[in-house]
Amino acid sequence: MPYKIAPDIYIYQSSMWQTNSAVIINETANLVIDPCYFPTEIRIIADFVSRKRSFNGYIIFTHSDFDHVIGHQYFKNFKLVAHEQFLLCDRNYQIIQLNDIDQTYYVRRTIPFIFPEPVITFQETYKIPIKGDELILVHAPGHTGDCIFTISPERGIMFAGDYLSNLEFPFVNFSPAAYRKTLNLAAKIITDYNITCVVPGHGDIAYGREEINDRIQSDRDYLTGLTEGTQDLLARGLQAGEIIEALSGLKYRNRRIEGVMLKMHIENIKILISELQT
Ligand SMILES: [Zn+2]
Image 1 (cartoon, rainbow, N blue to C red):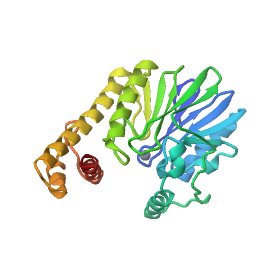
Image 2: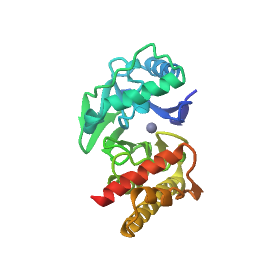
Image 3: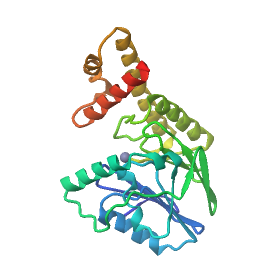
Image 4: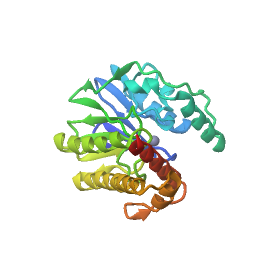
């Protein structure tokens, strides 16, 4: 069963990484954000959407990571919308990762995955008018170069893609500087549009200013600790391996990063070292 967050907005959460798909049912357009992940889960979302006819259908991709783009083929005649940098992403890298995980979990995809070709792309912002609202899509690079936020001003909701999760610290695959700016952008959007609900790509929905601001702050604190730590150790002449060792105990939300997450944290340290050295 989907989870209803507004009269016409539903959230489906996958068993895979608690990945969230959003459905907006509207007389003007039905919209789906990141339909995912297992075939049975995508089928349920597609059946739900197909029962509510509308003039237009859109699929919005929050970014090009495979876990977010996997479901588009189940939605016939939907226009695919993404940031223009989506067209430049490393498709093979995404497909290799997808195949690895499908093999590991014996996932059978009877509709073989084809990487999506967005027909609507944009640079800074894009607006989709719907009855009683206008969705605003905004470029939000940092996690990847093609990340976007989707805002529903009327309902005070923001769909954040892979930002502001309560499960993951920032995964800075693209740029630490861009990531910091995007957190500031998120804070500005929350105020400007009076956002009271943030749907992250993974994990629990954030309700209320306090929870939303707490997530922004936790991510800022992590990035600040990481940046200052790396700067300091570089200034002291330490080598990359030593810096990684010294910073691997850095905390996120007052807890050490452990297990599989440590790998992502180490990737972040590496990308910071290279940012600060250039
Ligand atoms: Zn993701």
